[in-house]
Length: 604
Image (cartoon, rainbow, N blue to C red; front, side, top):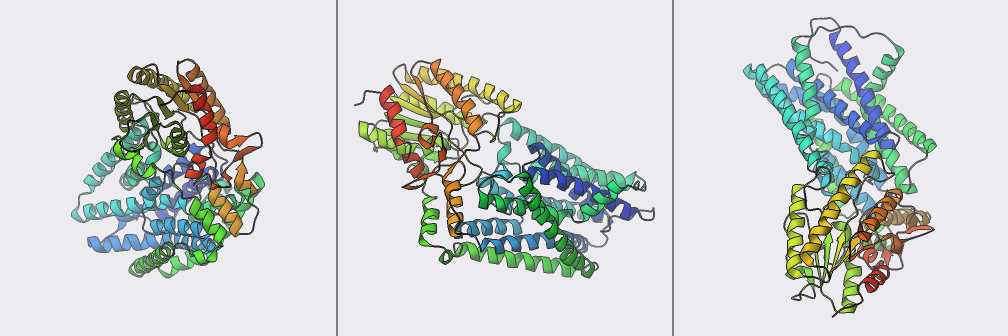
């Protein structure tokens, strides 16, 4: 791929070989992360390096473009389309084809992600779904967000460089890149401090700083550097060769790893991981040799045709994906049992629509109190895990003649002060309003979710420090809440809910659709088992230190010595790996009632 012109013969070839080596390193880091072998930090090393290379290459090409602005942009985007899109189009088409062998909900979900991927904006849609750990997702195209972010940054930046080049204002390119880098990096740091970083990791504005850093390197290389030959070595030669096929390998690696995990409902063994990566390498080599290289040769001097063909291909895949979504994943392919399982997995808790919010204001009392118009005797407060418990709380309150009010907010633990990495400003404001409201309501029972949703797996040193901060803040919340509601109110802390690295209901429907056994979906070891024990032990100690405080552990209702159940005769208890259905809430009715009857013998 030609870069900007240099005086030194062969400079473009040397530059491209260096970029290929760095691309190989970036993909290796991302592959380690996706396979579950590397630490999460390795994934971000790969992301930052890949975006930096995108910024470097886009800037070098933009600086070399000539002619009117429209001509420059068509030439740039045509070159980039023929370089980056063939592998993406092949992988998206391949995932949709594989989806035909999966049940309707799976096909519909893959088509949904495919649609947003070809539209170049899958990141925000993944955020809306609560994606924060790519290794725990069912989307075979989840990783396409990186190309979407790169495409957005390339489009915006090349327009700016082309306009500046046409007007002879290259010094403003330096200024714009420098300011953008600082603003983007500051935005990331602010989001981290406000505990909002997981919800914005895939947004172009947050990810712009490594892209702009690469752009600044390209600007500096154009002005000051002199090309030098790379030292010859087998390592660099191997990295350069691998870098040439790095993009198709990256695109094939995630679905090759994710699809077996979906079918097996467990992490892959080391041998299975190597087999999956070998399959990805074979598919990448075939894509590179038989599709990418012929298209690059054919459209090398035809950027207009390349861009037109790319738009048509993207449009065709987008229309196909939209049709699959509209047709609801072609449900005629599945049995009534599979369709019933998929429908039951969508059954939401009864008060969720009206009383579970994403905003900073408390849900109104009237629609969120059962029976309506009554004064609330029982308050259900916290995040989505408190919302999940509402069927069990309503069942117990109905037997005791008590009224229940729910006020829950996504991702918001009951903390009253803003603390970096623990509670955002909006969450703390929501909780302060709630505590003041509960003081006016004077309830007899307050049930509050107190268990954090932290990374699955063991308790690292960082996690332990975060737990120390969290429990210090929880102790402060309990003191403030007690001061508001008085000494007679029973406060019940909701402990950790079992969470899985797969969606049990989808797993059950998928394996039933394929004629496989479903036992591994219906009973399994939770992914957060070790962490849950630590958190619930600390919650028990916190409750013992405060009068009138008890702990309810969902683990006691959903698990036993043989593992944890994910369904019962009334259907699936989980709608994804973390969130319960209404049936999952009802499954806890007896365990919750035992605790409440023991600690709250009175009633109306």
